[in-house]
Image (cartoon, rainbow, N blue to C red; front, side):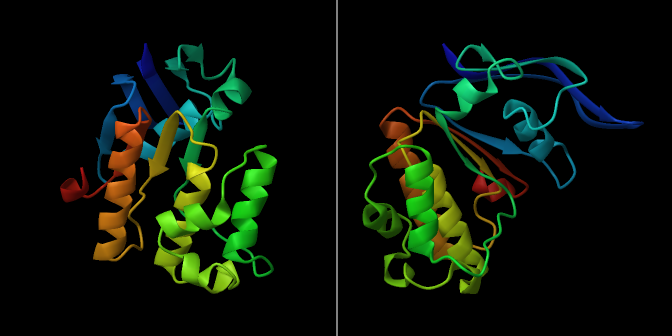
Length: 192
């Protein structure tokens, strides 16, 4: 069964067509790069898959479930790295990760995830003081909590240096090798 499948998926905002008649099939365990220029509808497509916005026409299924009818059941099985995730002043990187682990009812080791994304040494600093790349690594770590069946990563390399990009790719490949489906968007051809 495909992890993601869309048929005629369309979203209009007034006269603006953000997504036009998208047919897409992404198989389980596949790494799928969704390439397009800024403003091409990549984030809008992701938001329809997550039921943050409703399509004007067409359908989207995740794990064989209608994305608009079963969003809670779908969200239990996915990890999401949204574009432009921000952090408040009062929590450390470790505290953010512990909060996600607790809210998902998971038993992940925060240090293992922080190490995986390369920020274990800065785990006890306030996340708002992290560089853009470190914040991106933390948000990626949060998406990895509870070993999701599907990772949805919106512009995941934003703010990352070359080492961070290489580390992200390595983790993505490892997760896909373990059966996780990875759907990521990018406007940079070399990333896909």
